[in-house]
Image (cartoon, rainbow, N blue to C red; front, side):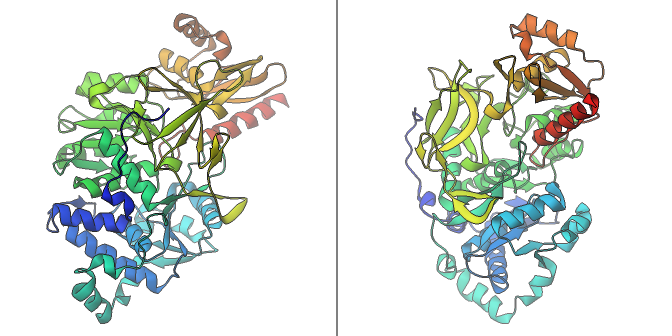
Length: 528
């Protein structure tokens, strides 16, 4: 099926991120006080953003080569976004490194994307406690912004003030909307992360798709604490505001659960994007007064729990809208909207996205979702074949992307996610969604965190292992919940392991890869 909404690309989709910034500055005015704000004292107008982008792009071009893949190891700040857009405007490819992945994860990302130089900041590394991790990047040259700025000499200043600010699009060499705008890295929740190459066209098309689903304006204030190395934080949290004129407040970490609600109220934020896990933690510490200005809260990156949804509605009177997407789709594929928010679904497909459901043996409802649209990735960098872009391909055909998710689409076009195909276990010959085991656990113990994985079981094929922060949770309780909710008892976890807290990736998703390793190690230990 195809989204019923017509997809007529706006002018920005035929340009680049830099062209989008220039167009936004002309549309909304260069002198826009408080357009972007971060923890660095002061705010930025569109004119100041444009000047910073041109200056950082020209500086970066002095120490890199055209077409070079360049690492960016920086926090949520206006300067980080300006550097990213500036690099692409001067024909370099910014690769956004996930600093929560540790030295080994960042080094692997650099190898996969062929990165030899990494832009970062000494002050950032010191404040974030990342000096040791950065030192682990032994194969790459670290370029510190503090040491780069003095290289912007008189000739550069004359170029900037006398030419580039007056004729910005003529001042930069890169103008191809199909060229790589950024490389992001998959979260690695189920295995080794890949490099995802997203073009200018894909990112701007997704911004436009989001605009067609929801209304945004210059009166909005986006509170963006999601990292820009993650597609949700980059597109929804940053580029959407850049194009629409909404003001953006950048915050460096989504994990400051007590501080973020207070700042949302202080900054008068109207838009908040987050994961179910983060939203639940904000709700624990927020007061209704803190969140009084929010008009739209969108959850993505992981399934929105019923407990989180009910808490936000009951405590703050806010209906959280659940969306769905992937890094490979820049990222939004579908989203609920305030007027037609249907709990239990992730909304309808965004405009211009074509979908196919491929049947999967053993799964009766829905099928594996394959998609095609203007917001799809250019291709992958695989760890096994570093530096080589491989275009997307699925069983439906070339150019299609296989999400790996089992999805059902109803008669009105609403998508229901049944689970990832990789997150199904074959227990006693039956295909069982691991998410069902998590639903059972949440039904019994709503206030705790739960995550299910599976291990090989000689007698049953595979066995479900539930990790939980509730030390009192039992299999008898889960079995009773399964009976009461109409789920088969084969979905009840075989083993329960109590943990202090769930391991999370930088995106806010549960680190299932780590949990599977823990479950396997525990099984080997108990079998000895």
